[in-house]
Length: 239
Image (cartoon, one colour):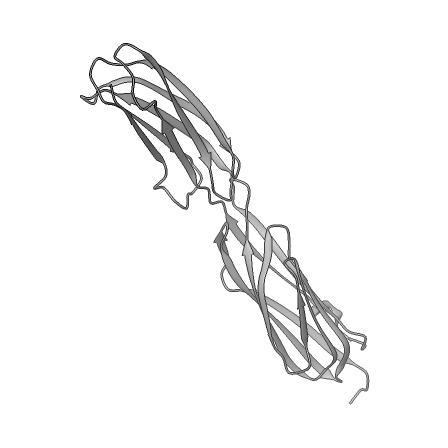
């Protein structure tokens, strides 16, 4: 047995290869001390890349490995790590503010004050994909009532309440009379809407002789959505 020599190795795997923005996945870090000696002053660090937030972590270790975590980093340390395997499980939430699928690479590293004859296996990385997930919505408002022949204005709001940018956003607005005939309409090419962004449009029209009148707004995007139920807005007005 060679005294004061410990071959530490680190492997890292992800529970899935990809998630949608706002989703979570698990990483498993497997730390092995192949010896022949116990490793002294062991420190395993795992820094979260931009777009990843650490939710929780736990350890199942053959030695006295202890954890310190924050939203952006994990550190596992041991004064002395015996021969064997230590496993650290990490749950992270991944975000993606763009409208495209992105790749996030998470890298962990282990060091020791004990000599290591193979430091090449002390670093482990895993790359996952994070697809964009927007949530566009629309609401429309009309005056409560109006007289026939009056000119009134419909106000419509188009928004993205999702965590990713919504690309190629298009909005529509239709005003219909009591018979369902379209008396005014508009189509708006809105481009991209960033997370939590919104934009307003107005449409003025002459009130038909018979009522009530109704307004319907719609919004679409080429980015995947988490909720399509809020892509239509409606309002009505007494004549």
